[in-house]
Image (cartoon, rainbow, N blue to C red):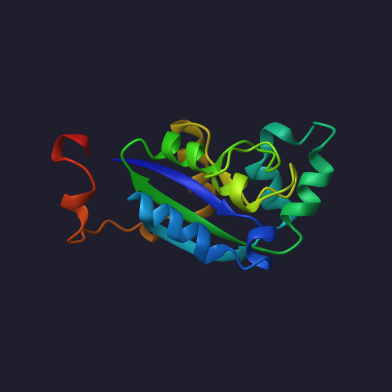
Length: 153
């Protein structure tokens, strides 16, 4: 099983798309193992987007990510990082293919609804920023055997 970090950004929360996006992740067969709503502070934004802080677009990114509440998710499943990235679609909603979250629900490059880790290393770093180990749950459901074969776990 692989873990990934997903953030429903302020535009997803304000537009009331949380349920739609969570539903898509769950319908795909991914398991939500941690979830919390919070307000990203400027310090937290700098920690999360450390690689972008010195880039010219960072001030707008920080302004956006701190503008309203977000939902932080810890998500688990086989190949979770790549699966989630494919489900999100291109960063710019106008260019994202239909059928993806951004392609179906987004129209902006900046207000692109969702962040998803781009590697397993980034996922581990981002999960540690937003969750304590005790906040990540391990649990089984009766559906687990119907989502993927035992050799895919």
